[in-house]
Amino acid sequence: MSVPCRTLGNVRIALVAGASTGGLVRPLRDDGTLAGPAESVPDLAAYVAAQEAAGQVRWVWRAGRLDYARLLRSGARVSRCHDVELVGALLAARDGQANPASVGIAGVPRRGDVQPADTEPAALPFDAGDAPEPDGPARLATLIAAHADQLARIGTDPHPAKFALLAAAESAGALAAVEMSAAGLPWRADVHDQLLTGLLGARPPVITGPALRPARLAELAGRITAELGASRPVNPESRTQLLRALTAAGIRVSSTRSAVLRQLDHPVIPLLLEYKELTRLHAANGWSWLDAWVSGGRFRPEYVVGGVVSGRWASRGGGALQIPRLLRRAVVADPGWTLVVADAAQLEPRVLAALADDRSFAQAAAAGDLYAAIAAAIGGDRSQAKVALLSAMYGGSGGDGGRSLALLRRRFPQAAAFVESAARAGEEGHVVRSVLGRACPPPSAAWRTLTSESADPDEARDPGAAAATRARGRFTRNFVVQASAADWALVMLALLRTRLGGGPTATAVPQSGQPELVFFQHDEVIVHCPIERAAEVSTAVQHAAAEATGLVFGDTGVSFPMTTAVVGCYADAK
DNA sequence: CGGAGACGCGCG
DNA sequence: AAAGCGCGCGTCTCCG
Image 1 (tube, chains in turn orange, yellow, green):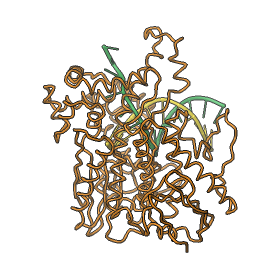
Image 2: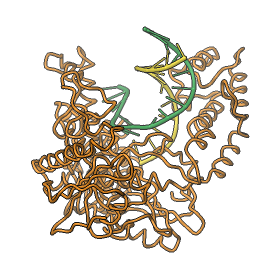
Image 3: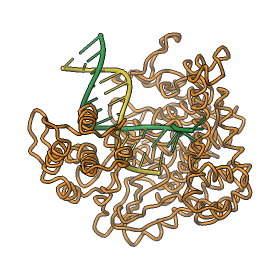
Image 4: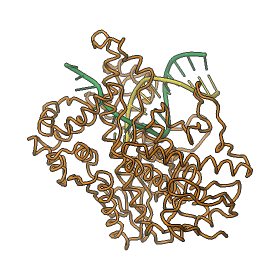
């Protein structure tokens, strides 16, 4: 076993896994240059654990989603990393590469991605995948070169410290994501099943061929057919059939959307609305979802860090970020444990206040209930204020809230000017960036063609170009807020993770009794912990939020409160 | 028969 | 005058 290497300053260690338990490592300096010879270690997990125990290390690897997932399965936890794949995507977006998601290390496309026609097919040092050990040194060298290149490119940013923070937070996000997938969200299959059975009837037998409807759905479908006076059974899930049947029954409607149906007065409408609600539950989160995604009392989704252009996470499989409120009943802490559900209150408007450095807005945002404070400032009620604010951030022009929006502009000119300037940049085809420097994608070639100077700017003569221009304006207007909110949330998550880990050198398998992050959804986290540690976790959340605010926004007057609820069941959190 | 696209709806 | 941001995923429909 090698001796942990310690030098002054921070230690980085580049790591590539071998085909079996071993791997290659090489120490680096903080600027990415070599700090020692490469070394082959027979048991990578043991090596990593030993280094973590000895002090602070930042692991440099291709991708946490691969390298860390494997280490964690072997019981090695780490505190910090530089994720070359994720940082590469951030840099690619910043440097205007059209499709950052498809760009792998140092511009090398990942396997499975379409090779752009105008680039040379490149060697795929990391994608040999199944290639055995002999590739190790080459892969290590490529990794080290990519890392050094990324550090240099971070250094050239107009705001290198902020971009470096973004890179660190994104990398830490990958660690948290892998750990959360491994931990899983506590999920009571029996509670879920009871809920389904209560609403839909008993689970229909699983047969081959077309699936059977649960009893309650079959009954509703029959009543809908009867109520519409149709001669043959109407499948309410088929828009075509349903539209035809509605028309035949004298109900004129342009779409079968719930919001549209709700405005009609006909005895079939409540039946249809109930059918839609129940069939949605059955299709999206029914028994087959339970079979596929819940095992051993845990729901284990796969998070996709950086999966959304704004920096929000996406998820793959199981619809982890769309758990219906109804089903939060099934999220129950283990006996003797509890859930700390923490939610950043009204995050996006507060982010706007901080971004725009609007003093009066910041004052309103210093209050506990921002919407109420805004309502007081513009002289309306809370719900109007909320709609006006959302309109300002989404690029709507208000509808009923038009008047409030105008008031908002007058009362908070800097905040209004901030989003409007972002919108203008987008309309002109520019790229905008979040507070930490995440760049939005450039407009597509199709957009440029459509809105180019040869296109007619007169809406009446060229409605397509005008619509496309406005659409991009709405996108960039929203991007600066949504992406900056994602920056804040990611930094908060990273800091909270460190605090829960018991300090930067915490390591090894989570001991029993250790609080664990189990869920992250844009502006909300859930920590599963022993009941007696809930207060400590709530405090950690508050500290993480305050620290994130300072790191991301500096000396802002805006506060970013997090509401924390200590509950046995997720459904009781709000 | 499989894939693409529209639609609809869950979440923030 | 009207419609507004970002996702994932299931079903139906159309098309090759």
